[in-house]
Amino acid sequence: MTSLNTNNLNIALNAERIIKTIKKLEKRIEDRFPDSSLQKTCNSFLYVAEHNKENIEYIGRSHIPIRIFIGAIISMSLFGLAYSLTLINFSTVNLSFEYVVTLSEATINDLVLLGAAIFFLSTLEVRIKRAKALKILDQLRGLAHVIDMHQLTKDPTMLGATDLRTINSPERTLTHFELQRYLDYCSEMLSLIGKISALYSQSLSDDVIISAVNEIESLTSGLSRKVWQKLMVLSTLKNLPSPKQD
Image (tube, rainbow, N blue to C red; front, top):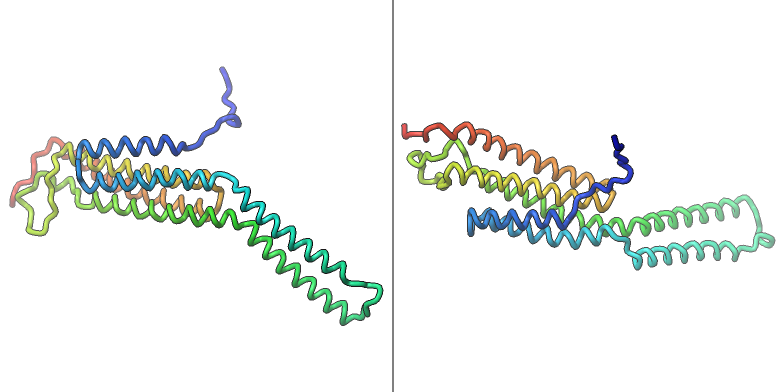
């Protein structure tokens, strides 16, 4: 029996394959529900996903110009501090207690400010990438809610109950099979939104990004459960007669 060395495995989501899946899903929805709001939403999702690919590539690679700029600023700051210390002639100055305290306080203040500046500059690249990622993650979160709105009025218990409509009732013209496919498409889109968002935590190991991605995955999982509850109800109603007017 051969043993599996998990250290050599490279398990990661592939952006190209996810986008290819979204394109396929968009075509499937277009074939089944042409010019529908669901098809337009999936088309918007595809656009965001393709734009995501560029952002993920940007976030995943090292940006040498930014790092050179940060390194140059930090080096100049350290050199300036070291040079200022060389200007003090300790053999001629009055090394009184007050002077030592004043000099120590000024040096500590400079070191604290320099440390804060170094920390700010050293995290600059991550903060730029984080801002880019959070902007797209907000779009994905919004898309998940839009998909939830699409399935909101798709009530399987009202399937075929055309005689029970009121003036303000939503249109329920889908057949049993069409409603099943519609809900399936919603569930697939929600799952793919979670996969697209996961690409960001995969590309940038940042606590803020990981938290945002986990939030989106929790959101899409919860919305998908609502869809699957409807699908389960729909499966039990397959062989039942349509509701009749009271």
